[in-house]
Image 1 (cartoon, one colour):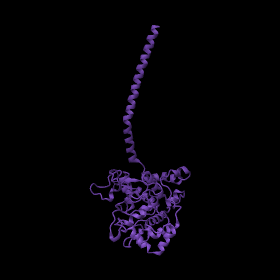
Image 2 (cartoon, rainbow, N blue to C red):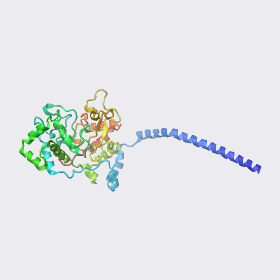
Image 3 (tube, rainbow, N blue to C red):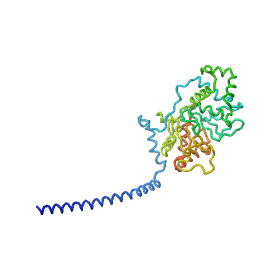
Image 4 (cartoon, rainbow, N blue to C red):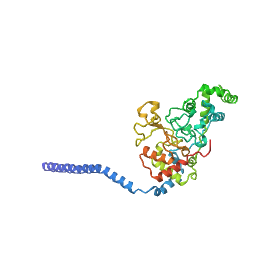
Length: 366
């Protein structure tokens, strides 16, 4: 019995020693893998950076994906951009009245400017100037955005200070460097026009008023949204876009542009800092307009934050950005790549993305 106990003890000690040795080896191997893993990842990244195929070689991989994109509903639901449609349920009489007011220069103090002066509908809803010129030659402080799809913005103006189209529509009328008027002055002039008074009485129970002017203007602005060729493509018409435009869209997604420019309006639904990946503004040179949301909230964390602009009709609305710093769409795409994505976009990528952006132009005029 004593001999058996001694044998058992020896066997048990041998097992403990064997387990300790092997566990130590396993731990050492795991540590080696832990230390080598980042190095292996770095080597792989360097290898891919130098030897990855150019975009031209990837086209065959991009196009089949796009051509079969709508074979099932699940694929369609994953698209970051949603197809636009003309806004339904609008009051046609309000829209007609709002259209008259949109082009009526009596909303300005000296009867020289209308809403259409800064937002010409035949030019993408923007005047094409770095900053708009107000009554008496007053110079604005920021680039005028397009009005065509403003109905789909979550807020209005670059700094988001207006929460509705009605609020936005009334702003320029009383702004001293825009229309420089006042509501009593506007009501007096329009009230002297029997036809306008009659129209307001027919559409609104309480007739002509500042509130109803803003309401009619907003209703007209809601009617301006029009689908583009890209919307037909989103809805399944694979012939609506050229191969280059489809490649541009795939690159737009691949590089992460849809992180900010997505949804129905391809933007217009969130705030973002201008200079996310690299400082865009030089210290000590920023203007008041460059402060963005900071001008509204006074919070340091809102400095240089702006409402992300819609990219619909963007090919028609140069110059670009709140400060009109980019004169061409190609330049704007390169700047966005550098400061918002941290990328130096290759020339062929920029070229294809610009072609895609051209497919966002409305197909019919408002």
